[in-house]
Image (cartoon, rainbow, N blue to C red; front, side, top):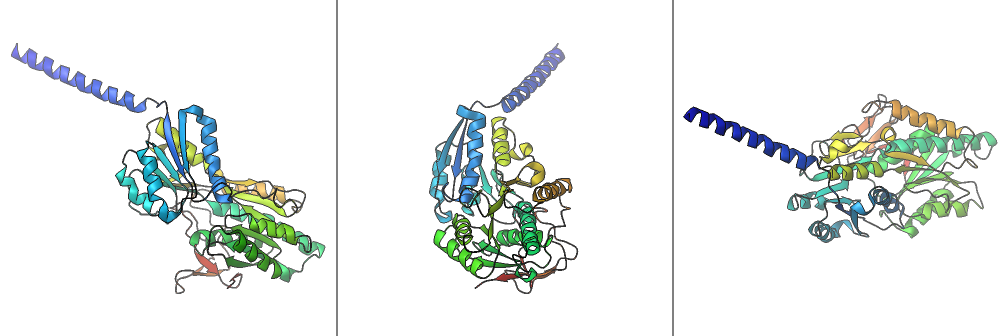
Length: 400
């Protein structure tokens, strides 16, 4: 009889344990009714970068409606973001998205283990040890830059054929904020896209040393135009380069390629196309994971390395917008579609056709570190942050 009691007790214990496990499983998989989501912007929606990022918030509101409560903090400088981040976390946000570049986000995450912190990547995340509730993400922008370069190259090719410029005048200009690998990666991909159509094309770059200064960006653009650049693009935040091109076009032929936000309204006569990082796939995927009590990375359609995620055209993380067929060269639309398809068909880690050719480059941080690209360089192979930081010899000039 004692053995029967013991067996019964053991059986009951096992059943109870199974019920507890089942309850926990059901509790974990049951979808949450509401979420509180925070957004922290390093600028406001009047600037291209922040406006582009805010489209993800709009998509979130459209998809979930009243199920998401959203709090937004704008114009938060990188060295001043601790207070707004803590405020959002302590106000009950379940997940916070930050568009700026600051180490503080990673440092604050362990203080709020029940809050997920998602930051646009600002450094090479490969082999980085980070808190479990800290995540980074970014679209593979170099893909859009390269396709934009093809568009620019076809226009220059047309200008040469029509006699508007000579081959020696195939010069493109780039207005850049800072000399970082992210920007160098972008303007190099753009130039190599141009050179896929016009092999003799060269580039001139001016750094403004600020992300957002209308005056500095316009002055830099005007200087590049005066120096003979026939197509301008940028990695800064204001509309100034587009405005400068539109104004200059009244006296000379010059065109503009935009980034992050279409400039077709600001520069209808000169803006040819736009490439943008599309933040919506990550933000919607991360919030969907939170609703379903899942790990964020399990719901992301892209390349995942730990808590770092990235993708290109193949997953909709990069887009081309507003191709202006009125001024684009004939055949541009077909060329754009073919280039995008080439990226989509390439296996991740095998896109070696962008940074490839008879080129040599020097690391912007270390002159003793050089590279030659005969075998190609694979960007975003293991990290969301762009790592190509080599200035190409002879074809890229950094203006003082």
